[in-house]
Length: 291
Image 1 (cartoon, rainbow, N blue to C red):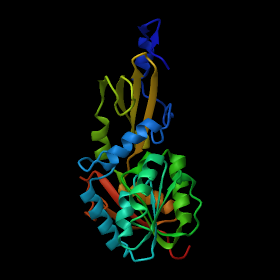
Image 2 (image 1 turned 90 degrees about the horizontal axis):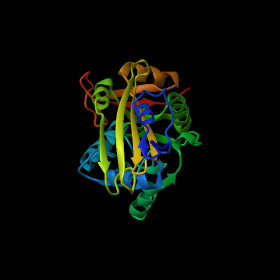
Image 3 (image 1 turned 90 degrees about the vertical axis):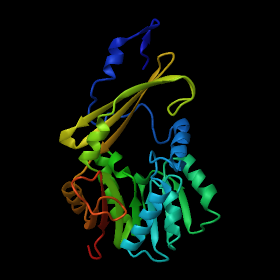
Image 4 (image 1 turned 135 degrees about the vertical axis):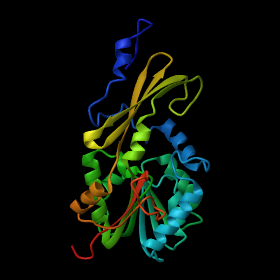
């Protein structure tokens, strides 16, 4: 789309960017695999001073330690980390003797993970793959999906993911993940802004304007972050990032629907007790020993 016509801004097109799209209207491009943006996502993962893409190193270490203790992790356990990024959690889990596999869509993150950790941590392997296409069957003792990745999928993909995770777990295996609550979502959806970048920025290597608009779909418990990236010649690309938010009741019901037992619900993946004032829900779900 181009908002310039005969060197004039088409205000009708510009106004259309502020309208609420239909649920799960796709983006114009893949945010997670765009070659330019992926470099910036990797940089955010590795920045120890921000939680923008990964949690801070000390939080990752505490979380891995708590998970290891809660599930009684032992040497030889097979662990699959979905959406592993540059392998920050994989490295921690390997310290407990796990045979770790990390999967991520981003070749930039996977290449970094391989280059950083493979020689030091022979019990870690990395796959550049869409984890929605999992074809493992009863292979893993533990599967993790950390930092709200579960929230980003539309309903059909989320349900397919739960089926695949269930199939990939051994009987008695655990699925550990986190989602955010409505409290967090409502703070998130208040943010609307625009900014101009005159050189290379997060979204483009060329000068551009970014218009950010948040939308709430209360009946579906979903918030949308929509980004319109407009070049200096008017070329416009739309990126939409969807997020479900959950209650303990509906996430528990969803897990039971796909055969899981809920072994623990917390305010995070460090074992903090859950309360109605927390932003996150950390869940430990178990595949029954007997189906």
